[in-house]
Figure 1 (cartoon, helix red, strand yellow):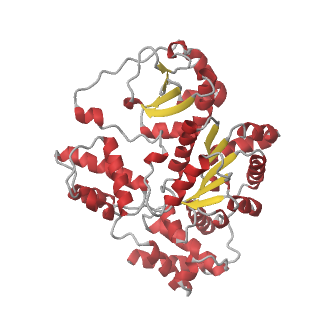
Figure 2: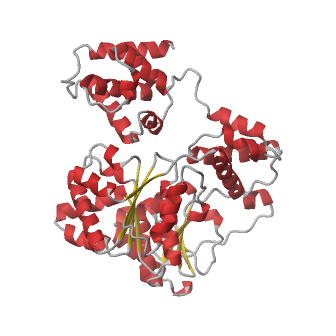
Length: 464
């Protein structure tokens, strides 16, 4: 391990600038980021959790390259929130431009207030499989991730499938950390947007061969949100080639998707078949006990002290399915407890849930689908189904558009109601209706009076 004292800040700053470009460096790193070396880790500190998540998703690959360059082959990168770590005056570096004489920041003074010192924001940058809450609906997915690491598992392709906020990214990151901690191998982890950007750049420059060689220079490749390849045939063809090369060279690949490959519109059929040939594991929602454990995990990280005896016995029945929503509720409950100087109890939870509830006037997704079905003279079940009849496709797009316009439901929630369609499908369908209303896109297969039908459905929902 290279000691932190020999960690030349100007060289590191210049190296980051070379990898990501000077404009991005100036915006993301120049005045906001601190870096230090501890053991075999390059620790990257940002002002808040949102910034940490953005840095991790955008520049993890580049910073891991730098970690290996300055620390060695075992070097890794970890992202933390700045006030979670007390930086040493000798090792912490505040990055300016590569040409500046960089100076370490002033060491923060500790506080004697226990509520402040323990109430850190939840850090999700170092998630592990052990942190993943297991219940009956996601047990298979968690087990498949653990088995995937084993060299003799016989599984070379793993596909984790779930709507947003079910823990797909958690499992992939846990898979990476488990692999690094138990196996002597190289792992690459990136999101689909980064993959697409690099692929497009390689295609334009005619360097796809070198790109594939570079991205597969590892033992395991992990990719988040692969369904973002929808509607990008060139990128899909290249990724299919990556899958085949990886199979020949026994390189394992794990990906996450919002829905099953065969249900994802806009994917090449050959790519669909290749993905379906792997181990496809849905990540189901948490049950009541699982949601309670997740809430308890978030509250413990926030430093919550007193909790009433019956709180964790009954909280799960009141919580939503979304892990992100539960995280937000935990922070709200924690804040209410501090505000009122009282233990965490069910009354505080109900107040937090009440604050998160939708306006009573907001129509449900089911009522929107039934309204559209009634206007068009068809059944709601047919609209929700998979038929590609023009009238049914129009009914679905009407429903997507009206749900986004007249309700507070997210695109993911609408997609889940419509047989697990992805949030991007819902957004695209709603946007198509908006374009056709503006005469930017002709509705050739729709009846001439479709705008009147859509208006009538909207008026019924407004009255309701």
